[in-house]
Image 1 (cartoon, helix red, strand yellow):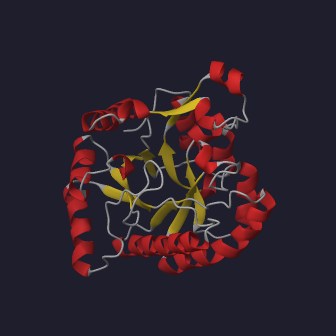
Image 2 (cartoon, rainbow, N blue to C red):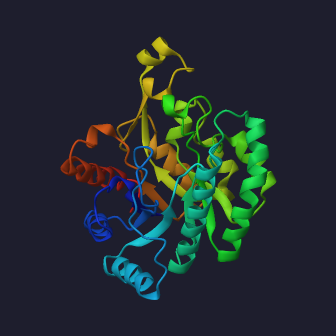
Image 3 (cartoon, rainbow, N blue to C red):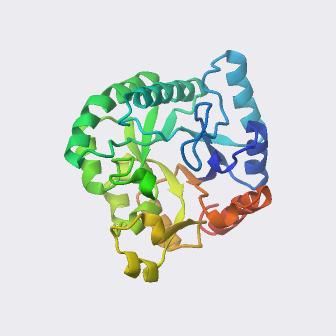
Amino acid sequence: MKLGIVSAIYDGFTFEEMIDNASANGYECVEVACWPQGKAERRYAGVSHIDVDNTSADYIKYVKDYCAAKNIEISSLAFYPNTMDEDLEKRAANIEHLKKVINMSSLLGVNMVTTFIGRSQSKTVEENLELFKEIWPPIIKFAEEKGVKVAIENCPMLFGADQWPGGQNLFTTPKLWRKMFEIIPSDNFGINYDPSHFIWQQIDYIKPVYEFKDKIFHVHYKDIKLYPDRLNDVGVMAYPLEYMSPKLPGLGDVDWGKYISALTDIGYDSFICVEVEDKAFESSREKILDSVTLSCRYLRQFVI
């Protein structure tokens, strides 16, 4: 496996600074954030380290050469929007940019894009599945034509009032995965597997590794900490951030030995990227860099 970092934590860093720091910490790959220019709607969104509008041969060569010189591979180009937004203008813009990210992934020879399905927050699951049938087959067909795999992260995108009531990503549970893979039975449509999201949903995060072994294209390493005393006070119907918190690997409730053992069982030997979303390490640039270093040090006991 190749250990990497999701570049969204490097907000305010240039492409070169981001690659330099990942390399200096001993990472082997980076999942590169590629958001459009403009104001971010949430934390970790709006970060862009590769300009997908610049498809010139010189720029493509520069990105490739710079990464190669630092011994860094690009695991994926990342853009996590809501492609099923109820605002039709936002929906169209998100789909258009996602296709640009897919195209750039092809041009760079990365051939992987990590993203969300999205969700219409006020609609039922059944209604959202019908919307998925309408919106996503053309996106995957475009990816197939470009030779790009699309890996969907299993984050419900339900943390607080902004995402209430349904969250902003339909791709949340094994049951829904089965339905969506039946609708789009494409070899280019798969999973960006993050164990932390299953923990707070009270779902076994090991069992699906085996069932969906052929669909796991990319992996996130993020931890989560549940607070039982808070959960006892607010219950599972509360906003999730009232009873849980994302943490650095090793500082939460993921059993990393058990999880990585499952990945080795299925023969997964591709990219694994740390996703830093720990508020305890966001107060300064120094703290952010510490989080990147600490995550790598902890995970090196499992990945060499």
